Length: 382
Figure 1 (cartoon, rainbow, N blue to C red):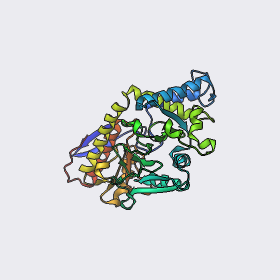
Figure 2 (figure 1 turned 90 degrees about the vertical axis):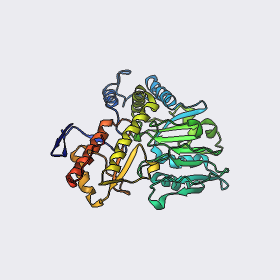
Figure 3 (figure 1 turned 60 degrees about the vertical axis):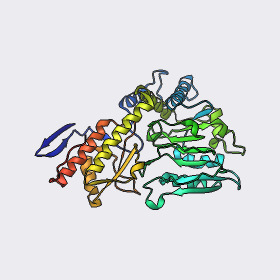
Figure 4 (figure 1 turned 45 degrees about the vertical axis):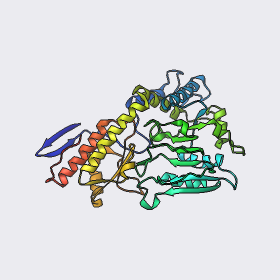
């Protein structure tokens, strides 16, 4: 990217190949991961076949499953007594799979926190299987914050919440502790920061947000919680069946697991979750600083709960948003349009997004402001 400053105006010139991917999912993947995955599609060196053709029952692919599981355990410091499952159906399947397994009977009630669009979807699905107690909701505010004033009933079958709201750009920083089993949807911030897995009975995450390509769902479940289930469940929706079959009860998403393994190897090479968390803070702080400084923009989420993964913002004059979106596209920005129910803008800063891409977005915002408000004396934040 070439940056020129002429007459106090900032211009960005770039080739068509220079794109900055802020899409919320499927996520951006590191270039080395894409290259190795592409090579494996043509010919996987371990078997002489394409990774798309390899038998999921082969020793070669079983080693991929074992290595991916080992990396999940290592990177998240998963304690003994937990199983790692590789499932399909995305987080949306988990919305019904969790209550189908753990909420049965007229006397049971599950506790849910309604802090965003996907949390509301999880509540809707759970109501098909039993009683649901919505402890708190921020729906009336447009989900601009995650409720914090609530009490988890001690007789709840489990407590469910979403750690990071991809659409609204809010994130719950503190892990929830409770005497009842805690279930968490970590689809958009898993592997982005350190967590204490022992505080959860079950964690699930669609891989396409921050781990790998679409088609894979990672579940980290406490065996004691899984074994508490006493009622009959269809095999394809029973966590225990997949645990007891090493995630291979049926044909798993072979390529998605392989690509996730490559991505987790890349993350380990970067220094692991602790190291990438520092980079994520640095990227998010740069963009939030520009949003707060630039007179044309404003943040959408409550300041104390701003997400490191999904930065949401609007323009003070919403009539200008379409014009800025077109301007940003010319600057190579991809995927910054806000979710259809929210509007505005959303920049997803997943692990693989380089700091330079955030710099480019900030430069784009500054340049647009210089164009619209030339009399303002801007001081770039990058």
